[in-house]
Length: 487
Image 1 (tube, helix red, strand yellow):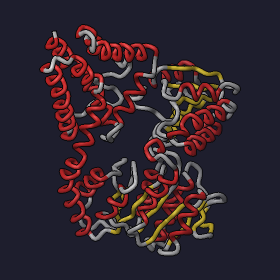
Image 2: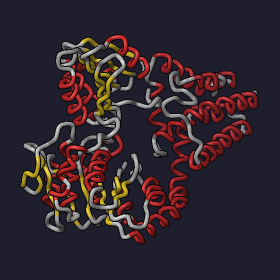
Image 3: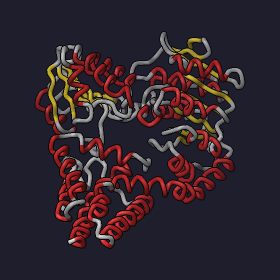
Image 4: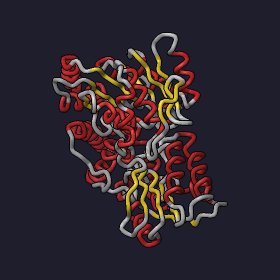
């Protein structure tokens, strides 16, 4: 009987493993992320609560009788709602995923075989129950190997960057990095040959790929967007991508779940200044104002701010054009000054800056209503800005906010989502809550507002609601979007 249980366990581990491997890939192979999402899914709905209880009963019961252990493979029909193949985030069989799958497969097979040989049913089924933990263990064990495998691409990129002679501009921040990069590239394009890291290629391997594939001889400025999930990562990037100019756009609780404290976020972002010749810092935030003050003691710093237009080192240089993110433009212009570009040569390009995709992009829906696409935003400041844009666009018509809420805000997540719903429900006509991740907080915040509240299970259902309820002159804001590995 024990070998039959072992066979059932191995069979069930295939679809279950594919689910959790997809989560690992979507969470950038961060050790611990798979277990964290397992807990979220098993706690997400009544049906998943029941399947979790069945699994636990199977593990505990197998101590007394092998038959009880069969409950654990049966419970792997769940978590209900987490698809094996994925829709918004399908599994991609990269080299790294194959190595992760192989390592975790060895751990699973080892646990099952050892349990069967020793006739310990509890070991067999616990291996399946703890599969997300084993994948996280594999991620942890493989991390130094993955780093070594990437070394040759990093070394090639570092050599190519050095040989090009390009001046490096490094940009970081809790949010606004990509938009600032886009603005800066456009402003400099009239006078310099510029290459910017594409999309959100802002980590070690992404930037190495960006340099190896896009940098050419004659490039004068390379703009590197730099992201981080923890202290030390940006410092490592700047070792082989040393910036002439380093810019910090904004600080907020984005990824607070990973960092633990806002002060840790500040320290991690501030690493970008350590090897830079000049720092450009938006001092609208008191935290960054303190960074600028401290760094001025050891390096040149250009302070930029917003309010009554764009201010650089205390001088108002231009008003804020409509449709432009003021802080991002201020940093981009500050970088231009740091590079020695005469601002009078670039200010004429300010009114034609590109709109960053999925960041308050304005579209026209087939039903005649205005769509504000802010689906790449997941921070409180950006959400408030997008809400203001919605109210402006929806003057004279109905307004609707469609959102799953904001994520990775750590201990502030519930509070920030309640606050968003509270503010929005006093202004908009309709609030459409998508999914379960932040449903409770959003509903709690919307309780006393004027908005009608609709709950839907997915983005697709929300789109259908919008098509059925919005018409000419109306406006809808899609604020953030979560891939389908979120419950």
